Image 1 (cartoon, helix red, strand yellow):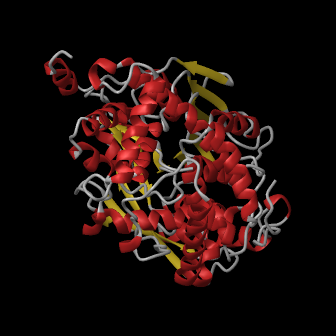
Image 2 (cartoon, helix red, strand yellow):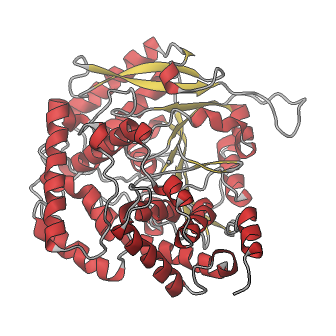
Image 3 (tube, helix red, strand yellow):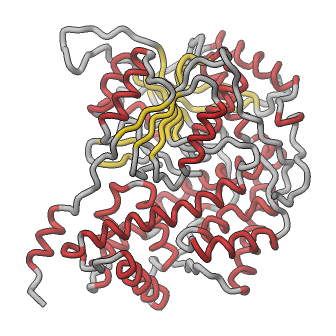
Length: 540
């Protein structure tokens, strides 16, 4: 469940029937945390509260401007042994500005720290404090210290790696929607090798990269920031361990925003959630093809979704025969358009690149879809954390026949993402670390302050049913839905209705009753120079 979004003025800012053996983690019945871990978290939080965070100049490797401060907070690798090995999480902060963007004479009182997690698992929030300069975020930046951090395993926070980053990008690659048996055997071998690499490189620490530990780390961070109660915004996967936090530490919650909510039902985590994600992406891929068809005069890729699909398939076939620039094959094409399934900001760029490629100019496609070797270390690290957390969190099918059956059936009706999603998660079938039993996310009347859940109705990365399930499980929560829209991560985006609810909640504690709906934000428009190119084409 990957890739959250924050928005900048220019567009999207990416911060970006189980057949397994019984769970073997430290959690008890229904995923209930063991007493030792409960005590360990309290011990670590008390220690962090006493020590605080020594914020200062950020390390050059963080590539952050001078107005951002950085520091670290120590957390136990194993909460059952709070005095054992410690790991340091990197933290970033921009102080509240106190400036009312609508009234320069008014000094805005500080409300504390707003901690953000962008999801993943495996994404870093270190860049989050920069968002305060964006108009949609200035009111929040006036009242809150904006705090980001790199979760355990990510970046410089006890970084996790499963293979040499130099070998992480495999390009060009194929992306068969109905793979052959020989291709399946090849991917099974790769998955087994990747799982072995994780175990070898991380050793005994591997088992401690979990969502439950991410939630515990969040409470230690709260204490280190000097916050009696947590104000938190999580996007995508950040909503899942945010919900774990709400279940484990309801009395420590001040306000929580769950943006693009993951389905927290223990039976969904994570195998079924990924199947549901693959099914939902087929609908989002249809939305994108409909939009391209609507602008056929600009892109010339077909005036119906079916004709756009044929253009895409033609490009994939050409790339299979001769990769663009020697590095963009069908796999890279699929990856680029999968990103567009997350964020409609990308639609004009992807359509323009596909159009240009089919007319003989591959430059834009190579730029947008090609691998970037300079980012290999960060990408491999993010993928390693993603894999470790999801594999550790729950039981997965260990029999390849289950994966083959479920994904073959699904690919008949949802071919766009199904198998590529399966390959990404397949190392979990061969995982050696013990599995946990997912915590039953649930709060009763009066246990948790009111929380805000945001969801786009056609979000594919976290399908809408997940938001409904989260809403059912968190007592007193309010669900705000962006209708007929599918962008993943909608807080602070182009929809003033959504932003109004977020601001009212975080600034005033004000929420609508139970549910509210917002009209969709406007569809993207073809880029201006694309229109000019189209107008300049000679008549057929």
